[in-house]
Image (tube, rainbow, N blue to C red; front, side, top):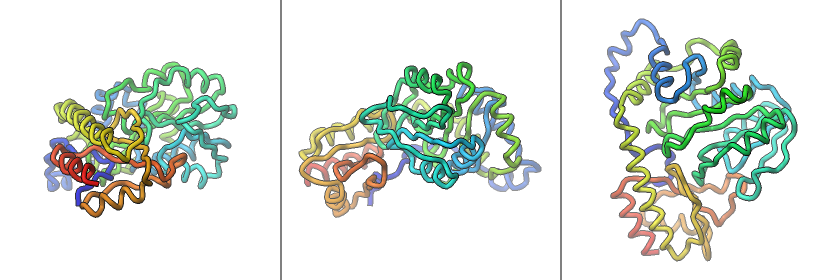
Length: 313
């Protein structure tokens, strides 16, 4: 079965690891990794805190912030809502598709993924930041999928606004579902304070070495972005021509959100499964109903096979 349901980059960086030498290492220092991240993402290493995976980063930052209200611009990763509820936040969701500027409470936490989850929309955040600053909100911007599009990061706002935290999960772009490393970027004071509540050695040395080698593959970024964009355009062409598709959201990542007509997502997915294609059922997300279908970029050959199947439905 050909899988179009995975968020993971179908291209892989050039990583050659000698696990024997890793096991013989005398220490699990993060210094090299932090320096590579500093160079890649243009933040000082003193502004970076590493975490043992995406969920761990979310729980840690929300627990650390310890606010009352959490506003999530949705659809968004369900990990945020789950963590906020478990940590006793009063959670509100804002429908990104309808109105970005619905009121939020003063000094609340706001969560915004850019590019967004499912639809891959990239947002210019200048006006939103003006509003968030006016409300003295603590802002978490999730840039997990930003590497797929190369658009401007929110790092520039770190100097302007002290209550900003940028979260990145590296498993998606660097193509390793088992890679348990995420990071939070913020100003040096915030990171220093956050670090006091974190253990020193919390990340597998194997994960550290994998990500180090991925970041050292300087050609990977250019190749990955070029191929993902090209293949996403091919996917868009397929669904633009499909009789069951009403519209597509403009994506800047490796994800497509499709609105169907004359058929629901369950039936459409079932038709493709009979032709040995696996598609993601996104019905559990906020503001998503039975008319929406989510699909991720895959290889050229797999897209060609999908084209035949879609046109045959």
